[in-house]
Amino acid sequence: MADAKQNAQSFQGSDERFKYIGFGVFPGKAGDIFASDEERKTLVQKVRDHFSKNRGEVREGCTLLEERVTRGERTFLSVAAVVLILSIFLPWFSGYFETVTVREVPVNVVTAPGAPAADKGKAEMAKVTDVKRDDRSLTGIGALFAIGSYGGMVFSSGFFLMLTGLLMIVYFLSCIALGAYNLYLIYGVKIKDPDEYVLFLKDKLRYNWLPVIIWLAMFLFAVFGASYGFQPTGMVNQVGDSYGLGAFIGLCSFGVYVSLGAFLLLAAKGKEI
Image 1: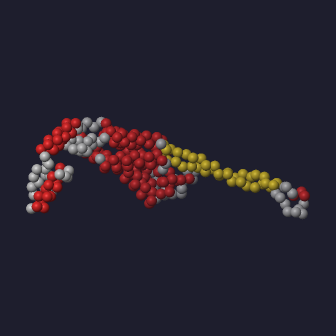
Image 2: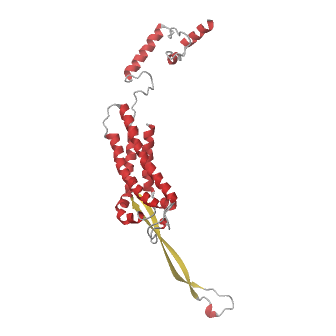
Image 3: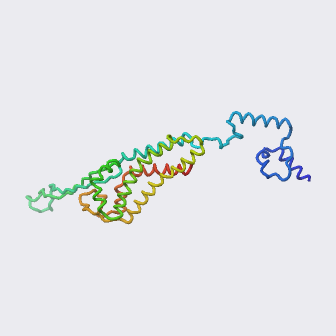
C-alpha cells in the first residue's frame, strides 16, 4: 500500500501523467492528476489558449489538421509533369556514322650509309586512314513524324523488335497524355474534402507506373533480340547487324531517360502520399 501511494504521488508530479491517463496504463486509480487547484487552472487555461490560436489543435505538433498535399508537393508534381511533356522535344534517339577514307601522303625515305646518292631523301607514298564521325539525333516528336520513314523497317523485322516499336509509340503518347492528366489532377480536380482528394490523387498517380512497366518490357525484349527485316548497311553504327540490348541502349538518348525519371518520380510520390 505504501509503495502504491508513493508511485501515485510520483506520477502526480510528473509530466508523463498527461500521456498515459485514459489509456489503461496506470495501475489502479490515479486519483487527482493535478498537484494543486492552482496548477489545474493554469494548465486548463494554457490548453484553451492553445486551442483558440491553432485552429482547434489539441496539442503542439498535431498533424490531424495539416494540409495533406502541401504547396511544395504540388509544385514538385507540377514540375515533373511539365518535364514529362517537354521531354518529347529532347533527343530520344542518337547515333553516328563513320566515314573512312584512305589517302596517300609522301614520306621521305632515309637510306642506309653507302646507298646510292640518288636514293637518299627519295619520297615514297604511304597510305593514311582517316575516320570521320558524323553524329545524328532524333527528338521524340521527330521520331513520331518519322514513323512513315522507319516504321516499315521496324514492323517488318523480328517479333520482339515489332513489339518494341509498338510499345515505343505507346510510351511516347503516354508522355503527352499522362503529363496533361497529372496537371489536371493537381489543378483541375474539384474535390473539397481534403481526405477524399488525397485518396483520389494517390489512386490516379499510380497510372504513372504503366510507362515504367512498358520501358522494362522493351528492355526485356531487347535482351531476347531480333533479326532485321532490312539491310542495316548505311545505318548508324549503333544499329549493328541485328537488334539486341546493345542496339537498344545505344540508340536511346537522354530524352527517353528524362521521361522515365519523371514517370518514376510521379509514381513514387503517389505511393508516398
